[in-house]
Every structure is written in C-alpha cells, then in structure tokens.
Image 1 (cartoon, rainbow, N blue to C red):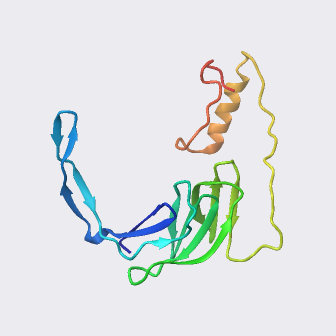
Image 2 (cartoon, rainbow, N blue to C red):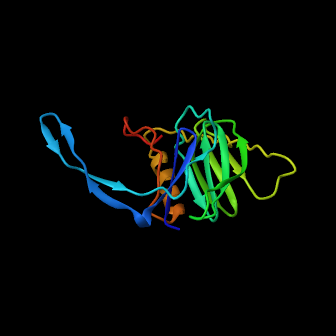
Image 3 (cartoon, helix red, strand yellow):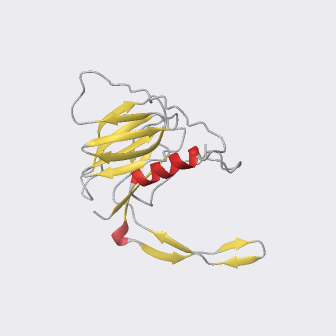
Length: 178
C-alpha cells in the first residue's frame, strides 16, 4: 500500500514511500563538512496517539493484512489500517506479561515473543482457557573423548535434511560439543 509505519514516544506514524524524495544536507564532522543524503517521505495522515505514558521505545511493529500490531512498553495494540484515506484505529489492546522483542503472524494468529523468554499467541477466537506449556526438560548428552557427542551431532544434522538454518553452539571455547 506504499506506507511505511513507525512508532515513537507512544505515537504511530505513517509515511508515503511512493512520494519520497532524496535530498542532501550539510553536516560538520570534525574539521570536514560533508553532504550526506537524506530520504524524506511525507506523512500520510496525522500521527496516531496510542498512549500518553510511553517510556520505552517501541521496537516492534508488524503489518499483516489490514491490521498493524505494535506495542508501547508492555501494552500490545492491534489497529485496523484503512490505507491512505484515513489513519489506523485501535481495534483492541492487551497488557502483556513482558516487553515484546519480536512478533510474527502465521495461521491467522499473532505470536509475540517477549524479552523475558515467553511467547504469547493471539487468535481470532477467545480461548476457553489460557494454555501454558512448560519446556520439556531434555537430558544433555554427556560423554567424553569417545566421539559420542560428535555422533549425536551428525545424526541431528542428517535428520534435519538441510544445510541451512541457525544453531546455538555451546562449548565453542573448549572445542568440544556440549
């Protein structure tokens, strides 16, 4: 829809990227004057105030379909985005048990990952009860110099059937697999 969204001090902003222009400005760096480029996009609508008490920066904002999800401190906001014609309106808000560090939308649900290590899921229908899941307690593979750790690592890599992804490496300093 050509709109870039952003948050600042409790306000939601929208800029029209299709009407953006570049310009140069002057900046003094030590004894040298430089002329870096700046990208200027005009606002689409007046900023939308979500709260008057925003103390921490809202680092997470996501748009999925006609909805924008963002937060101010520990309050999550869902807004309906009507496009360029009118500013978004708050559909609902929810106090969270922590501060969002990332969000994603999949299968018609909003997943909010909190800095405190929890994941909260929001769907279209209200659940009968809130489910809490504990992480399974996995037994760490112990072993010495017999190569059993390396064997387990090779089996895990083979089972993944891919050579791409992310990994948490424990024991990197010692050169041993955790």
